[in-house]
Amino acid sequence: MKYKALLFSLFATANLFAQHPAIHFEIETDQPCQTMDYFGASDCWSMQFIGLWPQEKQNQVADWLFSTENHENGQPKGIGLSLWRFNVGAGSAEQGEVSQIASPWMRAECFLQADGNYNWNKQQGQRNFLRLAKERGVNKFLAFLNSPPVYFTQNGLATNTGRGGTLNLKEEHYKNFAHFLANVIKGVEKHDGIKFNYLCPFNEPDGHWNWIGPKQEGTPATNREIARAIRLISKEFVNNQIDTQILVNESSDYRCMFDTHMTNWERGYQIQSFFNPDSTATYLGDTPNVPRLMVGHSYWTNTPLNNLHDIRCQLKDTLDKYKVDFWQTETCIMGNDEEIGGGGGYDFTMKTALYVARIIHHDIVYAGARSWQWWRSIGGDYKDGLIREYSDPTFLNGEVKDSKLMWALGNYSRFIRPGAVRKAIIAKDNQGKIIPEGDTDVTGLMCSAYQNTDGKEVFVMINYAAEDKEFTFYQHNGIIKNWTIYRTSDKDGENLLPVGSIKNHEKVVIPARSIITLVTQ
Image (cartoon, rainbow, N blue to C red; front, top):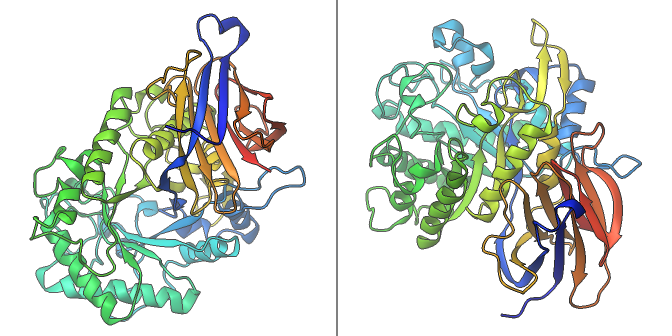
């Protein structure tokens, strides 16, 4: 096999050199991997309030999340998310305590009213952030639902309340649900100038939490119920000349996508159910507006470390078998992520940032994710927000603080732009022997490479280890390129901080517990 483009040599620090021989990384430009789509996050549930705060505070949050501009020193102002997720509410906010959802933060308004009319003044805080995202260059938007509107549900609520594992939607309201979604797509575009390019009508329908309730809006559903609803939504979109892409299935666990996990066959084997023509009752592969794409969440699959690798490889094998693409559309830290203390208590440091960067790396490299999306853009005292909020009692003002987690995501999202092509990396030892999966040391160095549509090359390296590492650039074709280095670490101010530039044949030091991104100038 002929290798082209860049050759990297990686050396351990001097005091460890004897134990760690040099590793050479070669980027294979003649064997591209997946094309990258978007990096994103959602407005759930905070933007309904943050979007009503004083404008200067909204602007700060929007700059952190969406800006692709730089400060005078070349440091990015924000992480440049390229897709924004909008939670279409089901009406639990209007119900208040009757909704049985205790926290006002987890309730959501609904555009549809009890009399059948639409109120386009609803969800105003969230819609303000649609505008702020668009003003900063975001042009791809995804609408997602946790529940059908309360007027259509079997229990009259947006939460399941232990009613079983079937869709909380009355038989006679399937078509009404499809009509509602078409009206939301058209209404937001008409009133806000925002087009939803993608729609996820179901969220974690296989999640066992959805069977119980009532913590938040949500409903379970079987694959047959989902397929029935998707076909009706597709028909409604075609009739209304809506080209929004309808995505399935926002699975709560990768294992439900190719197998069963804490559920049964009616909710598992989702790739096979929706994209194998033999599954006649649930096949969606020929349904208009439904791309050959599965979307799922990486919760519960990140530990132990063999799961982080093996589950994603199993997922990729099934996706490839049925020729289906994949987006990772939601994750945060959960109770089983014990390596960093579980989800409780916010963490501003590199501990959570590195842990999540390792997940991003595995989702992209092993599961073949074309898009990677975080759960909540803003959260409270839990490891589920890129930004930490401190609201006053009225929810209409407060303070926000950025995190190393946010900037670590930026090592990817700010520089790997839509349409970038990932390049495979081959690792070799000094004797030229290939090191299997040498680009991924889960407690050391993990690296991935990309080329943007403008020709700029991007190289992301995570140093999970407790000691510094260094590597040297080499290049086969003799072309000398300059690379700018952006670093995120626990040092104050090192948030995608440009820390210099190098040319080929020069060494780069990667500090312990840090992430660097190198971009050709």
